[in-house]
Image 1 (cartoon, rainbow, N blue to C red):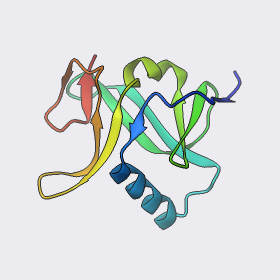
Image 2: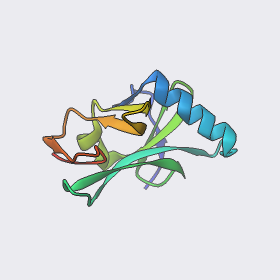
Image 3: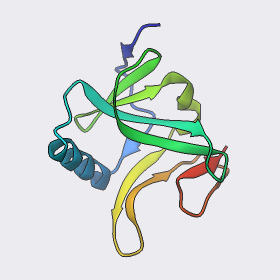
Length: 117
């Protein structure tokens, strides 16, 4: 399979807080330009599916998007679960870390890292 770069709008959004934190991580960890942010899903978690969020290289079957200058990789098959999702970064007393606001989730777990669709 080939890898392709898509010019179409990304199926998900990153908030300003997420972009700021991702850029900070890229600088601190000296992430190579060959890597991008992988966003996806996998089976597991207390609600059935868990989110994938981390830096990775592009793989066969990935679509590539650029959001605020950040390369984003997503397996084409995950678009069904992630379309319209917003990734945010919280840095407050009640929560710290990346959060996912997914309109496709029919239910989520208490910590927000897994969902069912």
